[in-house]
Image (tube, rainbow, N blue to C red; front, side, top):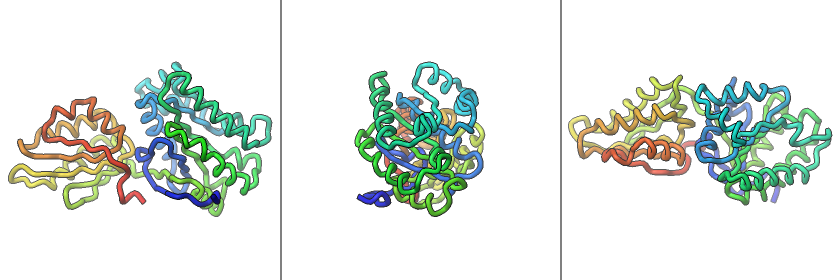
Length: 303
């Protein structure tokens, strides 16, 4: 199969990644410090699922301690994960060109060893984020890079290995970045930080992130979406949260509280990804008769 063809290509938020996905992300998909916002959501998702996380960063990037502080957000979870070995930080030159030369099979074998190690250590899978700027740094031929991306496909036959390859368009140029995107089955895009509501006939779709910095906006977005119900009595509303990149526990609790405040006989169906469903379950969503949680794939509008 050609390195630029795939049986299925999807465009998703980080929460829309499935187990076994081989995804890419570039500067056309994110802006400013948004890559780290995506990596933070990705890492938190993985840690919550008891998966091992391997972040492969550029040598010129943040220090390991700075990365952990950034991922932590004051929670202490990333620091604890690094101490336990669940979170591992490596540099891309060490992973891809340890002696200054790139050898495809050596790199594939290294990742296969990382998968095996994660299982041996008792984790439920391995999630990788790799900054691919090493290829530009050593002047790797474009065709060799594309060939490598196609050659790693067997790694993803293991459904518990998931990876995001990060390509900076400024280093690789528009044409190569576009070819690389076509070589990946999945492309991750960064959705707006401030939650946005799109009306749908049965309720509303909320996209963005729900975390301390966006909490007031998210609660307002929830109220706006729930306003689609019939105020004269019990009604049914659908909240499509499949485009939500990340939701912290307090925001999830606000959703449960608002649903429980609706009149008896009302129904709020939440369509969301696996991680959000788990958070809602742990917070007691099943004890709210007005609330129904349905785990589904990425929103149809994502592409």
